[in-house]
Image (cartoon, rainbow, N blue to C red; front, side, top):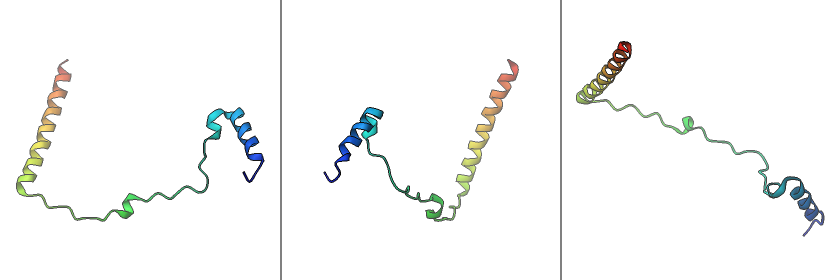
Length: 77
């Protein structure tokens, strides 16, 4: 071992903090996280066909209808 004080340092850490004191700690500057928005290429939205638009509208109307039914049931109680 190049440094004779290493073992005594380990002993002090172990007595002070237990086994967790001997675990390696992260050092240095944290890495930069890449932003998802910068890497994302803006793709044009696909045009929905007439049938797809109608299906979407039917779905929204069914959800609205269900919501109104639940609200009406709550008001009766």
